[in-house]
Structure formats: structure tokens, C-alpha cells
Length: 324
Image (cartoon, rainbow, N blue to C red; front, top):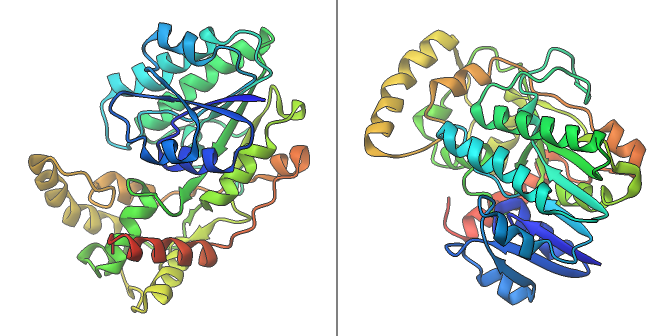
């Protein structure tokens, strides 16, 4: 079986390539760090999602496509979100000829905060960030193609964490906690709102098991068994880091007043940190909790890592590589 993976040098993609079996082809940019892929021995095709000719070369004789490449940041430029995540996905699908399955890595951020706990795949999409909006638009295009007979599957991982994650919500949160930074000495609001994380190895299990005819034409959340309150997340991580969890709760309004000047300063300095945004305070006052029951029912997805177990492994990796 010949499998194409886009986004193979990224966090999730690098773990997926290591776990896949078969003839693996990776679409990489000329600027990508490919050392790890070279060690694995996969075939490399240089190109870009915005370059249709390179995509035709990448998909040649491919049976399965895992499309993970994306412009990923929560505070980016809309044109980049649209050109890479939406137009790039369209270009890749249009390049595919006679493939068995196209597995698209969307995100729970396409749905955003939820009213029903836990939300299933029928929940209305109401993304908080432009990143999520770009995923919604890509999903809409894919679903239109599915109606025409295109064999696609949409997977929506919740907040993914684990070794090699160095630019996501969990990374910034764990680093700040390890440093006992000012931003982790208080909790905005009650701390009882829900946030949903999933360990990267569980995500890879879901992606591999989703490679089945049963999943064609469907959309699935890929999540851990349950969401956690922010209080629970703090308690778990602080125990692992051997520090006291914050006992001070402040109103979201005061938290935003305190963070706003820091956010402005970071922008002036050209620095990005998910923790240093007023919008992050807003996010912590909503619920993000999603059910992966459909994935379990259709192809046996069953997460194996508790947040405590996964976080312990992740923190150890951060220590080993000097991030904390």
C-alpha cells in the first residue's frame, strides 16, 4: 500500500509517519527539517499545497492520503489560513485520482465552544478562532466532494499534546507552569469550565484505525475519554511539577485587564505565546468537551492514555530537550 502524508515534519505528522506501515511518501517543502524522515527511510516529494503541479507528482500511484499539513497558529493572518488550509486542501483533493481514501486532519476547533456536553459530530460549528474557521471551510468543501463520491474521512482531534509539541496550547501552558510564571498563579473565573486534551499516541491510533471503508464519508472526533475542568488540569500538572496549584481565582474581567498590556508588548516584540492573549481568557470561560463514541463504534478507537500518564511522559520529554 502506498500512502502519502502531508505535514509529516509537524508534531502529529511525525508521530504518524513513525507508526505507519507500507510504502510511505511525504510531501515536504524545501525549507522543511527532514532529518528525522530521512532516518525513517520514507520517500520525499518536494512541493507545496499551493503548487498544483507538485501535488500531482506527490499523489502519483498513491492509495491512501493523510492530509495533516496546515497553517497552524491561533493568532495568525487570515490570508495564510485561507490559502493553505482551504485552497491548499482543495488543490490536493483535485490532484487525487482513483485513491482508496483521503483522511483529513481537521480539528475540534472547527466546532469551538459547545453547548452540549459532550458534543457529538452533529453539533453546530461556532469556531472562536480563524484557524477553526479555516477548518470549517475545508470541511465544507470535503463534504461537497464526498457527495460526489470522493472517498474522504474527516477527523477532528481535540487539543493534542505529547513529545515534540512545541507550539500548541499545551506546550505554552506546561512551560509557564514549570516556570511558576505570573500567568499561572491565578485562575480566571471558577476554573470549572471544561477543556479537552488527547495524547498524541491516542491520536495516531485513531488515524490508523480510521483507514477503513467503514469510515469513508464520515466525520469523527478523536478525543480522550473525558474532558477536564481547568482546576483539574492545574492540579494534575502541578502535582507532576511538584508545585502548588493556584488558589487565587480572579474575575475574567480583571484577568483580561492584566493580560492586555502583556499582549500588546508581545506584539511589539514579535513574540507569540498562547497564554499571553485576552482571547485565551475568553476561551477558558467556555466549554470544550467532545465525544469520540462514534469513532469507537465505527472502527474501535479506544484512547489508552489518561491525562496524568500522558502529561508525565510529555513533561519528561520537555526536561530532556531543555524546554523546561
